[in-house]
Image 1 (spheres, one colour):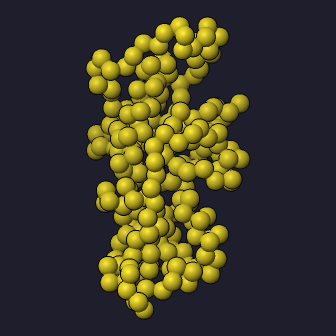
Image 2 (cartoon, one colour; image 1 turned 90 degrees about the vertical axis):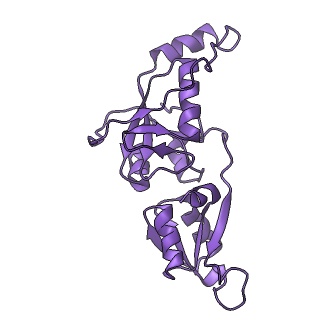
Image 3 (cartoon, helix red, strand yellow; image 1 turned 45 degrees about the vertical axis):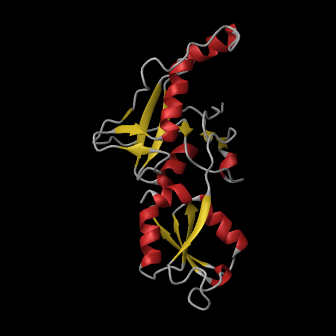
Length: 220
């Protein structure tokens, strides 16, 4: 059975499977005291409350590096940020048991979702391929995108090529890969592991552009 996500996307069926042990024991940042409301009888029916009471622990994937500021991970394992804080707030209100599961990168996060090793993802966009194994909710926050280039290239003639013939530095398995391949089939993609590496590739001249989250890029 599919578990519907509570934030930007949900996934996968609850199932068994191993996720490797991590040196840091992750935990969600607790909500501000006295801010989680109690849900009245008009919010949930008795049947819905009984369903929630029977739910097992929900395994929440936390890829690394986290998608700041949407998700953050401190050196001592505390998981926070816009989406985890919202999730914890909802979890407390509905009585859900949430356990963060650290993942080494985004590709392994999607792979764990396909294999049902995690139950919920927080920060990602919907694509037809992902919809085959993830159940998406409506978006909880805006994910504005932007095109980044070297300062001398953006807006100046002749320095950077047109996007259709350009080289893009993109995070591996991010949704921007699908967009670039669809819109600019002749463009070249350099795959990197995180936003910082993508921006560095553009800065060093290894790529012409980075296409991705405006907030994430500004946080590096």
